[in-house]
Length: 320
Image (cartoon, rainbow, N blue to C red; front, side, top):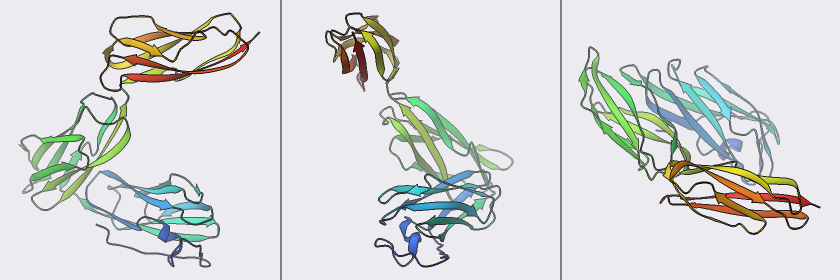
């Protein structure tokens, strides 16, 4: 999969304890990337990981490419010792014609330019619509699906579809004949127990001709419970005078608030409803008994089985 490697060093050699003879190029996890078979019209992205194992701060002064089909970017341009950054290469397959060099110019601790090589095999006999599987934002516990239509030129058939993540379930419908060849509907469904977070993975489609086509998959899984605001602050309250604020708790399905822990005589919280709802309102009351700062964390407990708890910090400042 990784077939090409090329390095250009400009200026004086830069030697630090953790760098090899290849200079700063040795700090990258890899120097080349081959996307393999890519359907014409598809946009694919690869991230080269750079870890600063030196004892000096690195500064990326600029990025340039040998072809406009690649859009370069970096997650950070100043990388402290021990820190990690990525140099990203986004390729528009409609403009690609030959291997592309991404030039990374370092300006500190001294000037050095390295080359990262990106290549691909553009397939005009394969089309995908859409060319990626994007679930967008989904609630924890839900089971959504997305569909991509894959069209193959005459003589080609899909033999297998697999995902790098076990949280994705795939199915392929029976193909339909068209004037170009065969058309398949690939369905990807997320398992309800997929972890909370924003992440991505790859789906791979294999054909009877040996092609292995990549479909990127992205999803952002939100918690079963969300709380707004995420923190409460009572500023300049008067001793002995209660002040109230509201919290909105939302769930992926109707739920009941069964308990609220963490309160005391100064900070109290009460749910306004005992019925099951997808949106609940909690009233927080701050009644300071002396001047000073107050700091608590309330834990709202619901009857939801998965991730049925949510916490909110509460701070208050009281004056006489």
